[in-house]
Amino acid sequence: MKIVIFGLTISSSWGNGHATLWRGLVHALARRGHRIVFFEKDVPYYAENRDYLEVPGGDLVLYQDWGEIRQRAAAELVDADVALATSYCPDGITASELLLDTPRPLHVFYDLDTPVTFSRLEAGEPITYIGTRGLRDFDLALSYTGGRALDRLQSELGARRVAPLYGHVDPDVHHPVPPAEHYRADLSYLGTYAADRQAALQRLFIDPAGLRPKHHFLIGGAQYPVDFPWRPNISFVRHLPPPEHPAFFSSSRLTLNITRQAMADMGWCPSGRLFEAAACGTPILSDNWEGLDSFFEPNQEILIAETSEHTVSALDLTDTELKRIAKAGRERVLADHTSEHRARELEILLEDASSVASPTGGSAAMMEA
Figure 1: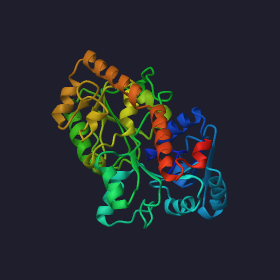
Figure 2: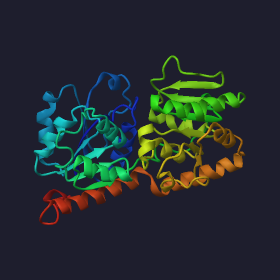
Figure 3: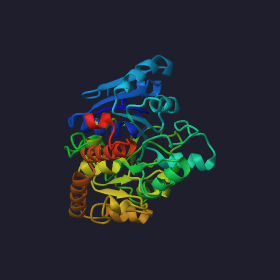
């Protein structure tokens, strides 16, 4: 298939979780013989931190202004099998209008930020990537979040056909590597600063650092404010590009996952960091949310923390216990949550949606593919 995507970014992992997910999925799709054309607006903060320049077997189209690229986009859509618009695409509404006006491809919307979408909807705030008709004109709406989010996409945004497409990891990129001395930590945390995660970070990371002053704690990420409550035994590494993630995780005795508040409230929304850390063979300590036990078995493949004491108890586990959990977590990810798994799931979802969308039981585009 030829798949045209209008997304936030694939070229820069700075301050966003989209890029790593797209890279893994695009690489898996390319290995399976599909061609991807990815349109990305060339904004300064991504251009200054660009760490990916080429889509394998396809094209990365960077543009400054929609007007200059509209003709190219229209031409790419003419022979596309699938046209996909995504959440947080800077020109999402305009791109959606163009792809919906093109009859040949299957029309798909992929919301990688479903909890945020509904938070804005509830607050009456504008959603800059979904037009006034919601999702009713798309053949398929994919969601990074499952559970009740799928029902809400239908009841509140008019989606006709919905399905989850969860996070994943590319094990060719994320895998165990020798520890790096500058990343060594008893407990690490990798994530962009977010105000709605700060209370949990305080409870599960900063306060435990105070309770275990002889342990070494490490934070990696971007956009941390100058008034962040650092402690003497907490080190900081500014923004780590994906190639550095394996060394970061592999140097951690234990790593912490904290979910954005809207994601935790909605549930069924696993962070890509969970799969990355597990694939690197690192034991994970995570906050709890509905649906987590569908991705990892608590206390067997992942540890759960709700209080500072839970974090301290996890730190006090023996190396043997932590290695057992890490091994089980890695095996689970390789069995269920790789980019290759998601690529196969996507193929099935597109084929099913195509059969429903076409009155003859399958669009000509999909049947040719």
